Each structure stands twice: as C-alpha cells, then as structure tokens.
Image 1 (cartoon, one colour):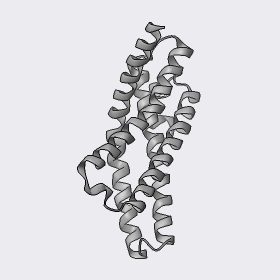
Image 2 (cartoon, rainbow, N blue to C red):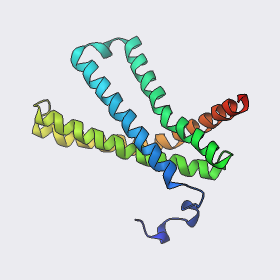
Image 3 (cartoon, rainbow, N blue to C red):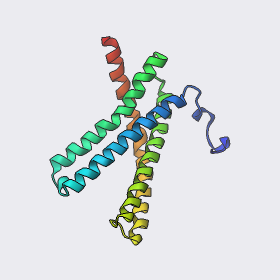
Image 4 (cartoon, rainbow, N blue to C red):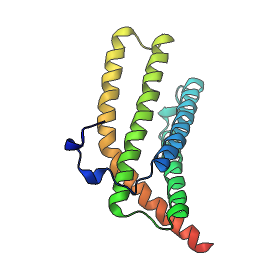
Length: 168
C-alpha cells in the first residue's frame, strides 16, 4: 500500500464500498475471459475473420457491450442499496478503481496468453520481451483511457437504472 503521505485523504473515501468493487472485478473477469476465449476460438477456426471490417466491428462492438455489463450491475445494485446515485467525486473514485481492476485482469489474461503462446510454440523466446513490452505500454495507455471511459459507463448505467426504476 502507498504511504498516506503520497495519497490525498479524500482518495480513501468512506462511501466507496469494497463489496461493489469486488463484485465488479468478479463479473469483469468472467466477461473478459469469455471474450478472450471467443476471440481465440474464432481466430483459430477462421483465421481471416478480422480481415472483414464488418465482422471486426461486430466483434469489437460486442466486446464493448459485454464490458458494460459489470458497470450496469454496479449501478443497479448501488441504487438498490443506497437509493441514490453516487456523488460525482465518488463516481470518479469508482471509475479509477474499476479501471485499475480491469487493467489487472487484462494484464493477467495477457500474461497467460503470452505464456501459452510460448508454450505452444506460437511465440519465440526472443519475442516474449517485445510482447511484454507492448503489453506494458498498452496497460499504461489503457489505464489513462479507461478512467474516463468507466466514468462515462457509470454515468450511462445510472441514467438507465434510474429510468428502469421510474418505470417500475
């Protein structure tokens, strides 16, 4: 853990529930593994699948839609539990935590994928360093991009959850 001197106290907000973050992580991990397996099987069965822009767009769009599920679940459960949506500061704090957890899950999947590729002969030993370096850059850039993306997902999920609650 980072010493508190380097982290503002408001970062450790009392209205941030570890239960919501743990549930998000579990659902996100399941969704990410399933998406990875679907992509892997699709690429193995149909190597030219990503050559078609329409199919590539459908796969990517489906992946983004599937990743919305953990955030939507969070919004519904938060509204049921708290009876309101979180304040803006709390939403940003959840977005940061969700992005960090998502990156850790994605990094774990990436390391396993590179390891399996190496074990199955798909990647040579001298390529592993390059693959891990590219993955590291992806993690850094991804973290910066995922924070506002998850904040947008949270905002959108709460709007949808509020509409569903108003309808009954």
